[in-house]
Image (cartoon, rainbow, N blue to C red):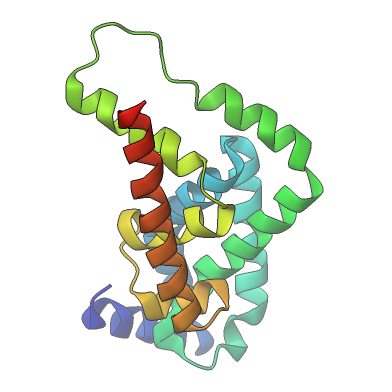
Length: 182
């Protein structure tokens, strides 16, 4: 995310702390959809993802006055959603697996283009990776967070994030190669 966006969000945080309620609604408008998509990626249930995000906003509004780095609002908010999503998964692991199997079944459609078929193969291969590697791939490639931001979101060192990203790529290459050789 660009510095200008971070500075703007930092200003919104400071304005909210000064009593400007509109500043908070602007933060919600900027992040709610992104947070819902992020929670959905973990949960595979839109209603539960929305509940998690709603709970996250409750935490955010309570802790926002104490945020030490207002410019890091985005990664801080996503960190809360990530933590709440993982907490939910821990409590509901069996149900999550059933939902994942249901929602991620490739559709039996003979009209898939080669590119679409390749994407399905990559997606299936990603599902075989450990969850921590899946999360890093998603945050880096789909959400376009920097390694530093991912380390803040997941509360891990930047070296750990680099390592997970490297190992995820290598394992993905191996899975895809073995699939194509078979």
